[in-house]
Image 1 (cartoon, chains in turn yellow, purple):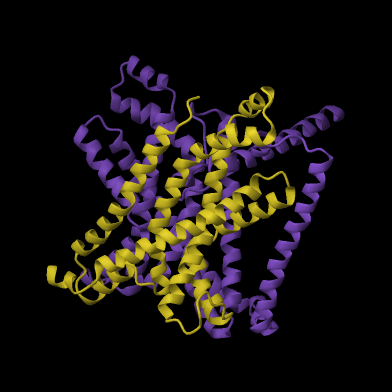
Image 2 (cartoon, each protein chain N blue to C red; image 1 turned 135 degrees about the vertical axis):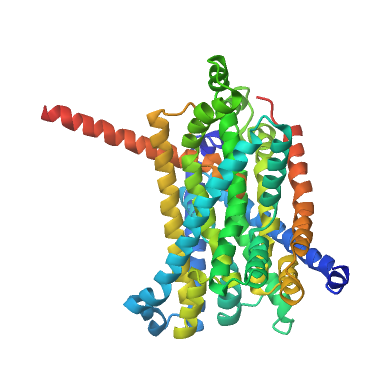
Length: 223
Length: 320
């Protein structure tokens, strides 16, 4: 078993998983924040556009989004995220990050919005009653509470994102699930191989879950 | 609580002007994006009528899209049924009085919740096809079902547990007070109420199952995306096929979400359970669909329904 495993770059595959998760998390956070701002803005059109994006993206399978990114956008529409001379693996890697970011941005948006929704209206009313201006009440009273309320849901989005990076295997990114498939196909379908890779994901997601729960507990707003 | 009411004052003349400018800018940006996408499709000849006309023909649907959709639904429905059984067993295990049992069930549930579904599907597929010698088609179906069952079953187990914890404490105490054992209290008092309150969440879990069944395409299960690929290679319209399939998924899941919302209101109105029914299953899983989302929608719909009922009532009285 050990000599089979030593012939494959399992750590490299998990490094690819981590890279995918990290860049996609940043992309999803940026896009998701923009969407959340649109959805909580007082402008009806921006609210509707944000809601449309979230509802369409959330109800589409991630598999379809990634397959469309590579077969549709990359091969047929010829959209390039890297110079055309770059190797195919660079292109699929970048498109995987794009697709993962676009998909999870919808969930980040909802997590942030649910944070705003945890703030009772009395907080805003009290802030205005003691004479704070709009900017002051936003920056001193409402947003600090809203961000704390959004920590726990953001944590579960990040965990879902780490697990969903495996879908990139379908479009040919050489991350953990793809390497596991190669090992099982070529060598052995033993349960040990599965457990090694499963353990890898438990190791990646467990600290995130514990960390975010601890953070949200420590920063929880006492009401 | 709507976000706008917390964050903003009633707009004055300046703010209204600013809102109008933002409205126009938003519309321009959205239309620009759509227009650019269509222009790009046109540039690469993806808007040719002969690429889209297959969707008007019956055999495109009967040979490709509908069989794919049926396979997707089949895998999803079988999985959610198995997942419910799995979730009930392990959810009860996590509520058991026996510490080792509680602990083992907890480890199993947490494990399957943190392992990617695709990983489980790939392993089960090759295990069934090679080590058990199952035919490829059967192996791919059961691999999809196994992966979806283990993951969603674990999520449902958590729902069962939190559903029981969410019940008012008096329910369990009353059961013990009239002389039932803890097990009897769980089975005949707490679980029936928790399960009733869970139904809408179970329905929104079906959305997750339906989306994840698309992963079966990686292990040759002939679901909707796979049939889209076949359709695309037959007519050379991959882009069109994927757009149509995306619309099918969005429509299906959107209907399910609405149905879950209605079920939630129905259960809360009937009052068969001491708990409050919630649709927010996907909060736990995919991180999304926070209570705020459904809360806001539900408030709108409830208001609509109340108006409808009042009008119906007035109608009746006028006639009498």
